[in-house]
Amino acid sequence: MSKLTMHERLPFDEAAAPSLVSTGELPQPEQVQALVTEAYERYRGTADGTVADYIPALAEASPDLFGICVVGARGRYAEIGDVDVPFSIQSVSKPFVFALVCEAIGYEEARLRLGVNSTGFPFNSLMAVELNEDRTMNPLVNAGAIASSSLVPGDTAEDKWENIRRGLSRFAGRELSVNADVYASESATNLRNHGIARLLASYDRIYFDPEQITDVYTRQCSLDVTVHDLAVMGATLADGGMNPITGEQVLGHGVCRRVLAVMATAGLYELSGDWLYEVGMPGKSGVSGGIVTVSPGKGGLATFSPPLDVAGNSVRGQLVTKFLAERLGLNLFASVPVADPAASRA
Ligand code: GLN
Image (tube, rainbow, N blue to C red; front, side):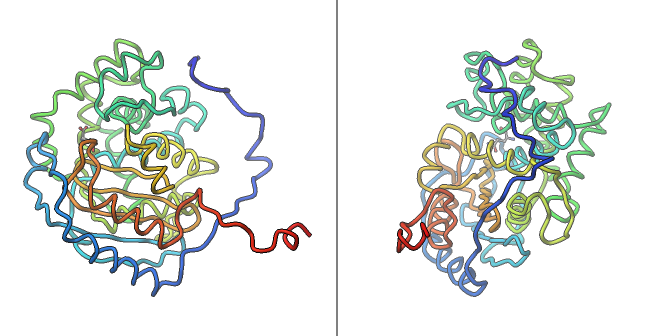
């Protein structure tokens, strides 16, 4: 067993004795829409960052594309900008595939097979595999993500792929399909992920043929979504695993909170600490410019803007998320002193 696992199982039977859950509310819908609009106006002129070009098809995206969507846990939404423009989901697929793996093999087994700690390295780092005895450290960097895809049920690559596509579609509440150009472009150019998968195979930390599963992972990253879809997917994670639009219970007991935990540890890769420090919410970014953030019990926030910082995270997306985290009261670590301590102790 992994040396880094702090404890195999903390002794609390969540299924038999359901835990108390205490969350808050989003502001009123008109206020949410007004703040989403304000965030859009405030940051639409920001020109920082560079559109990803290591996958040639991504370099074609206009740096001006910009969309924001908030979907509340009750299914209400507020949005603005390029909310209907499809883009490939890229790494934002990773937490959702991890969720499918937890569903299939259980979240304890998923932790043992994949790891849930942060790597402190870029998303496609080989050093992270070499330097850590666990090899895969977290399902949200490429090594752990490709290993996650390998644990999705299915005897063949095609079966695994169909389970991933269908599973992610349930989070989005509509049938998702692959962007053929992005898939072809990444397949032809991104050899690095094949290297990562083979390295994992040499350590027995991948659970299917490395070549075939890297191809499945590439298809997974090429699924087209809109910023609206991402917000619905995030809202499903904010709503105890139930898609608030379709009403479908996508995740079973205890999975949702584990998915958010891995998002907090590595959702923005080596900058995840900075992200939590500033934003105070689990998030996940992708190199095509999407970011999804989740405030449990309240809702999902998604942004789309292709120019990225050096770690591969959308610049405008980070600015908007910070702004809305503050204005919508989403930061999980925030509290204010109770007004009358004597009264509250009574
Ligand atoms: N498909 C991309 C890759 O594997 C996803 C990376 C990302 O979005 N950070 O390189």
